[in-house]
Length: 470
Image (cartoon, rainbow, N blue to C red; front, top):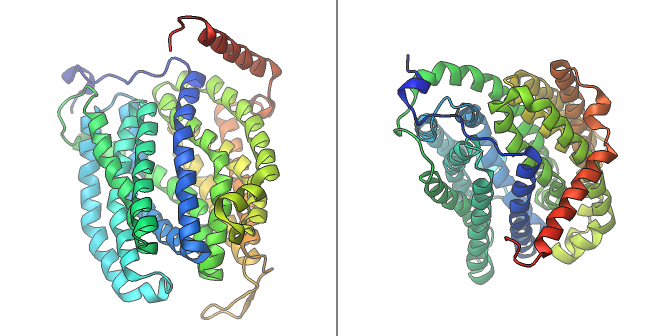
């Protein structure tokens, strides 16, 4: 058996950030540019394509991500964990993941092309076939871009990950301006621009990885038993969690059509602003916990207590400014998105906290708890979507199903309820693992906010001093 610690002196556990709060702060600051660029991208797409075109683009991209999630098998997060724990160099992690992805794509692409050629009119009647083929081509690009991000995250190179995301958005923005605004290519141009970001991410990601130390770029097939065992548990969790997060957009398209799907996409886009900070925390926390389980609980609970306040404040702010923001940015045609966005916000608060707990629990090596939460939540999502979205639905072999007919508002209520269930299940699991009390997990402490404010004032005063280091 290969001994990583003795045979390869370069193979050491990646260094954790000096302070988890500092690392989160730096990572979140890096996300600011990405958020701004993503907003501009969404505005251009919405104004150029309208609700129907926006709905078709969202549906095609969502279908590509779901195919990726089904085919990815949980490998990405497993490699992140192995690299973070010092079990493999970045070259070995990248080579192993790439070899496995190539095998998956050799099967996936021909099957996907055949299915589109024969059934695209049944599944996606309003979306042109070339757009769907581009979406299929995006799947391997998403895989390999994700592998680069997985290895960077395993090395706890979160600023590099954020820089990569920003540069991807820049590429998408340039493509939209050239193809959609200037060349007027419509939906197909928007699809090409969206996919191009992943290709740029792969190239730039490799350039970043080449700056890191490590051993030979060879697959570590001796780790396959460990990879398969952990990935199998993680796959069950990630698949259900991601389906729950994306399935409502597809169901809106199938049950209501392109224009409502476009309106719902904007509601989700605005609501997702709430998740940028929790996603940043999760990205930092997962490799940190994987590499240092013993000290994980105080860090995680401190972050959840801080997050719950910030998320509630963010939700109230979006309620106040959401409608004028939607009208100004996307146009009056998207004003119906506001009510759905408001109904999504409680779910966004719950989802943000759930993601942080899930990152900690998975980093400890217990992905089965995330799997239980994700599948329970998925069942709740599907049942509530069919109950709340349509007024009536005819299915082969079943009588006419009656729903409440709430449309995109029903999808928002279903998602909020499902995300709340996810938080409840993960909270129970986290308490079982750590014995933490609920008030220590979620009840904010004034002293912590006072300490943070003091540190911010100290940094600001130092920055104003003559000759202060930038």
